[in-house]
Length: 258
Image (cartoon, rainbow, N blue to C red):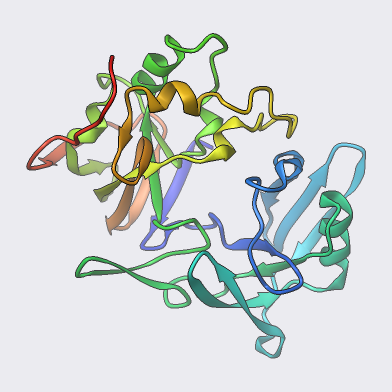
């Protein structure tokens, strides 16, 4: 994608849709890696679902508040709109599990969150509106791996080129295009990084996490990338300059050896 409109809850259309089980609990590639083979694209009316070997389905964006349901993403219970039986059947068949597709209609208010004393809003993403990574950090990791991995294993919103490896650890506030962003917390990585995003197959259940853990382990997990909040909304375009406005007061402390 060449351009993104960054809103307080993240990119405009990012993670506004979610698949849930019969109890309204969110499901992800952590348990169902086949979800990586589902291809989605935003349309003027809603969402287009596709998967190799299956007819595509265009789902209209639900608007009827009488179809609202309560769903759970991590510890947050959130109101969402059910996308209907046809979408539920399509996703159930594709994943092999009875499930429903839901939509967040009011991301500006549906999922309020807090970080320390800071209030912010979020879509259905794990914990924060944005994830920022750098190409240099991926290159450094791949130089340590027997089988290099692509950046899509880490599912960032923004990827920065031209920085030094792990330089993003030191950034506190940056400007890109019309936007200003605060980098607030390193991102702890999980087994989703082991899933090939093209095939939904796990080539190696240990990597890249085992290698990453040797030099990027911190209290709270094994870190790659930085979670961020949108301080000033606006558009970012591929090729925009990244200006460092403020640095962290002290560097992150990681265990392990280089």
